[in-house]
Length: 168
View 1 (cartoon, rainbow, N blue to C red):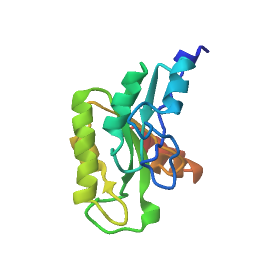
View 2 (view 1 turned 60 degrees about the vertical axis):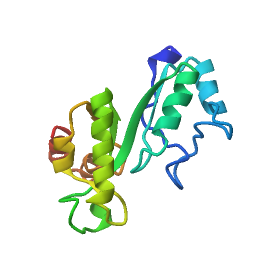
View 3 (view 1 turned 90 degrees about the vertical axis):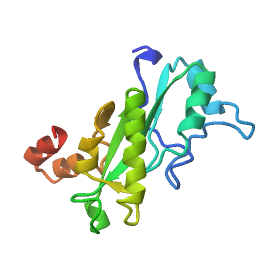
View 4 (view 1 turned 30 degrees about the horizontal axis):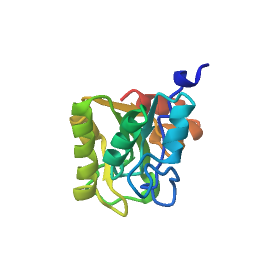
């Protein structure tokens, strides 16, 4: 596999507090050493998917473009098991990685993340299946990580439920 055949799609930057370590730009707003090294190694594209926020999206977009890396804007959202408007046990929330495939997807991703703060905040900004369906256009959804509802169902041995969740 050539370096350009692989694209990192699930990355947390310094805007994922206590979880991310990728610095987007230096103190003068220039692309970070990380991005420069990725470009030098043939990395043609990269996504950022910070936890619950898109604070680094513009900085990442311009820094990646400056070193000829295709910036893919995303977010790892917290998904409530039921309605985002109802309090639930935080352990019932799952993660889902969302990537914007175009400008409409970027706008829809901003709507999902903003609503998660204004309507779904319960210890963390949460979305739900209603919002994901409403703003699905232009969004590519990945299962997230081991904390996704799909992965949790599979780990519990419930492959039927994991398959249902993955195909919704």
